[in-house]
Length: 164
Length: 173
Image (tube, rainbow over all chains, first blue to last red; front, side, top):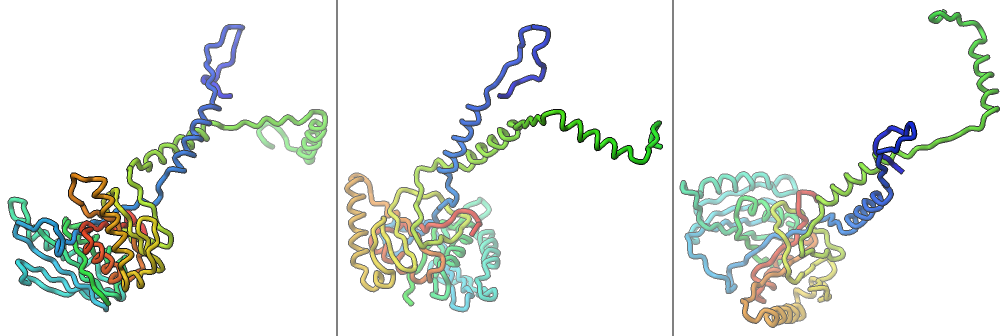
């Protein structure tokens, strides 16, 4: 039993010290901990939305749009092409980083691109990113590419089906 | 000489012997005190930490067996939608086994039928709304990306235009 205050009862006077029973308090805390531990979600599952516009009944794009095509190659390099109204306006290759994709360079390119296409009044044309996978690249790497592109504000993402 | 006292040979020995005799005369009384304050502090901290990490999101996606999700930083919240789970050995749509991935891709009719059934069920439940085409896709991180892309293609062909790739939120792997 715990008590508040440290002075013992002296001289026959009635003590004003209040005693707090800690047992129910500890019980309550233990129950709270058990409940929260059982209902805790240790791995939070989120989602990255892929909106495949081509070949569906989704509404057509009205604004002037830019298309960013990222083709993943078997040697883990990336061919990045920027298209405007179906015509390539910019194209370059990102070499592999050993046996992995060089995602940092893709991030740098995305930062430059997003900086260049935003007009002074803050508006930007619709940018659609299309990723063309290859069997040498696993799903985790594909998601990493989509994650980087989405991280720079590109919400229209598509994955081109490839049969290999 | 220590202070005012002179230390003689055998003084400490005498002291030890005297203490031993003294001990024999009295019963040993052990008083153990439990420090509750630190324990209550620890409990309180645990409760606060667990409350902070408590998620009250209504939609919690269950992970299928044999699937390790890839990690992503920009992931959004999960929604109420069917889940297509693809592991190295099986394809499961809304807790129902469809078959092996390679076989499903070569003969996708069972998957197409099940997708149409789910779409019909959704439309029956929401007669006044347009089909949103939302579906979650859980795939193992080590699968070839082309295999996953073919499943995405099947989903889109059945009107599921909003495919949500399930990922582990945060940068941890």
